[in-house]
Length: 303
Image 1 (cartoon, helix red, strand yellow):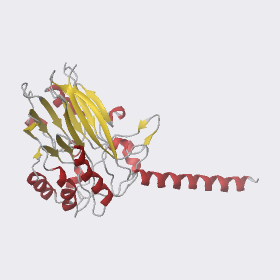
Image 2 (image 1 turned 180 degrees about the horizontal axis):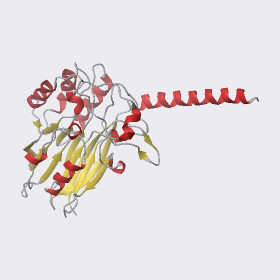
Image 3 (image 1 turned 90 degrees about the horizontal axis):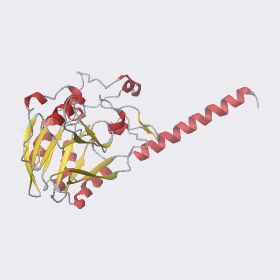
Image 4 (image 1 turned 90 degrees about the vertical axis):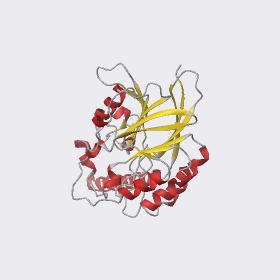
């Protein structure tokens, strides 16, 4: 076989392999998965609590299968729902988000927002993610985020952007605090910093993006558990290696799932759960070795 012929066949093979990988990654992006994790953070002797952690729906009109799957999560009968932002990615998405979450509104819940709840998505060169966290272009159009907040609050959930709150979940007292999205520098943790309530049954921190400055503050102040999203688990993972990027300053090893965090100089360690989320940017609807997810966290008593 002549070298030119080999080159042609090789090129065709690479193109075919690339097309197959993109087809698979597009398919995987719609394979919604429920993950489960057990977190020992409750006082000794307490019965378990279940928290449904939702993140990064990136909902746009027409995503019926995603909406149906999320609505079905009510059948799990969790004790509470915590949502860590990026609910939408379209100007007309608010009614679709509220319709999707409506079956869960009878449960105690709380939420923060992410950058994609504020700003309309735009095509980004994927290679830029390897240079560090993506930057927000100020020319991007605003989304109707205040309508989203009003709808979620009307549904009974607590809005935790740069504020503290309390919930009673299955008879247990929960001391909450959350920040607006650190990825676009809207976090103001200093305004709400200070020790969590030591008499609460659970001390819970909530953020969209798991930036270290926020994790440090919450962990040092005594959070038992911090919930975050934003990373998409890397979105495109390499088996055996994992995430290549996190789009923030957390290390790649903690881009998805349950881990822990301790601030430098602090003796307290908080459990940390980062959700890989349920969606993608509408301009990059692909996932590889990282299916979209929601997580049912079972909180149990410490040993």
